[in-house]
Length: 200
Image (cartoon, rainbow, N blue to C red; front, side, top):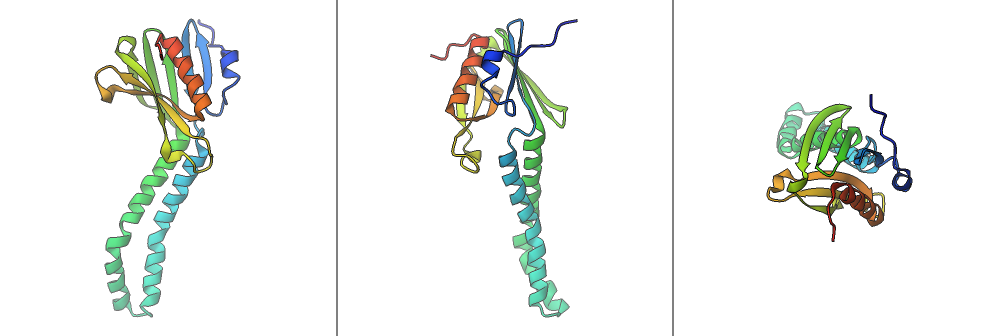
């Protein structure tokens, strides 16, 4: 039976465990991005979704009030409003689902000299598993997640993408929710070193 992986204290000690947890065994690095690592973004999406879901109720209530108790008049106004308010519950449900996904998903990344492997889970259930062989890895690209930037923090939010040498659809997200350029650079260098990739 193999012993459990032990954290690389020098590197892990400077990274917030709420965002990423590092462990290392026999030259293989594992990065674990736990659930609840992006509560601010999830809260913003969830609140917007709730507003979209509630908007039709206010529209219907206003229409009935404007009808002055006349059922025929009220139904006519509701029918005219329908084309405008029907999409909002759909958008609301999508945003609420995205908020739940942001809160509940985790990402496990295993980096070795031969390959990078990722496993995405939602509520602990495996959603996807992918692998990129080392000869297929051409670069480790930092991308700014602008959609979450500036909502609750002045620092930019980054993710790292392992780029496939020929097929863009085979690119892998290997790190996410990295707050600030310093954290992004540190994690990027760590992954590159264990994958044997030269960043220069």
